[in-house]
Image (cartoon, rainbow, N blue to C red; front, side):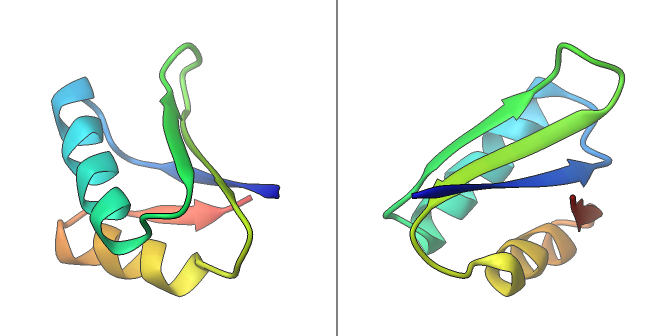
Length: 69
């Protein structure tokens, strides 16, 4: 497994929970978490496959931005 990290503009833990739930529905075979400890909100996903386009799709449909680091 490898870890993909994304910088996001998600501001609240409620919004982060929504994004995580949607991502887990779309990408069920991964481990997802948000890091709110720093000023930047970083999404980390542990996965075995390429998921970048699926992640971008979920964020875009919910009105958020993310960029793969």
